[in-house]
Image (cartoon, rainbow, N blue to C red; front, side, top):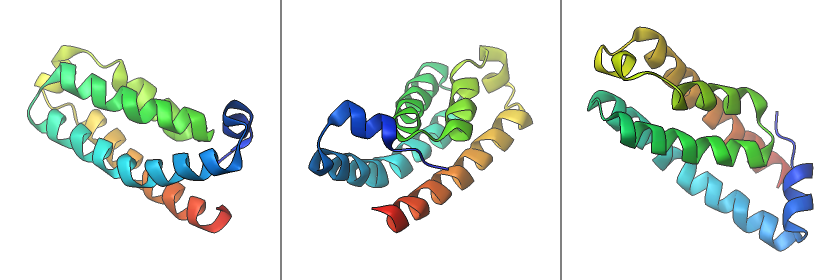
Length: 110
């Protein structure tokens, strides 16, 4: 569930809010794709950068569950990515679902 109150307060302008939402709708899927690619390539540093970027966006949108998933992913250990830990892959797949739900919800409220 999205909570735009914090973002509205931070931006203070409805036009900026709409621009941010549009940016999220275009960049969110790209960040998720980068998360998948960097996981498959076992590139921990790039993986952490990609998850951090998406985590920040979910935080601004007030999507707590997706934020928590990205926070967990951002803090994985090198062995988990090197061993392609199935729990990490499950979390990435859950994140993809949350991203789709968030975009769909944004389309109904903005």
